[in-house]
Length: 256
Image (tube, rainbow, N blue to C red; front, side, top):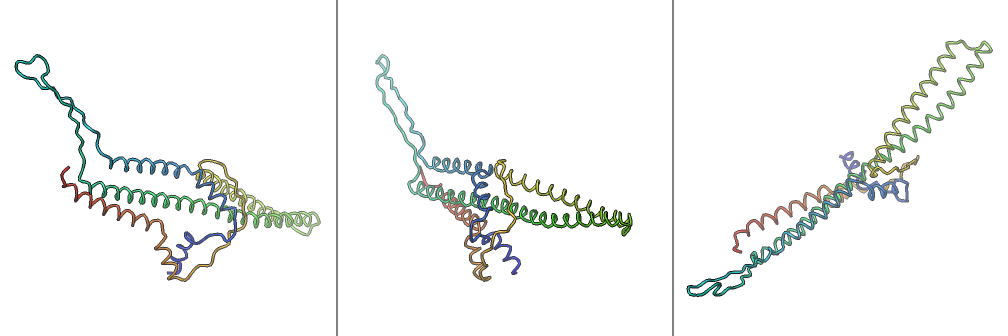
């Protein structure tokens, strides 16, 4: 449906035409996020392990003495150096599998990066929404203050009753409660943004949404999504890697 395509587009094509404060936030998160740092280190370790797994085994060195009747001590000896190795084609297959595994790991990192940056972007949009609500609430509070002063003066002049005055006062108190709740929501969003930024405080006080790039037609949108969606790319890389490992398993019958 068009609604589904729009949801996909939000993830893929909501790119600002000009610089926006959200861009700075996303850049900071990409550099500071603890999950991405840990994942990057883990991927480097797995790549190193994958490369080392395709090396030759350690060389075996043995000293063999020989004894003979009538000979005192060692009659002769020899130094035996041996090296086990697999059938050559197996190394090539493993090397190809290693490259495919590295590609899969890279795609998984990009998937996690996309998800984290989307979360950060959503928090920024939430904060913008809160700031817009706060601006509107401030106007309502100003109107309520003016109305409260008006009814206070009218009550002094006998043009309004205490009930009318209290009703206006109550509405002003409700706005105060709404303002406190809104501030609590803002603090929560800012706290989440700090956490996703590696617990490094980050100030984001934008009040305008970033401009949106016009969406392409449905067919183009689907085509671009299938060609670039991180989850699809991970699945494809995993499938290729699995198939290559199956090929390696079939070659394990070859003699060393």
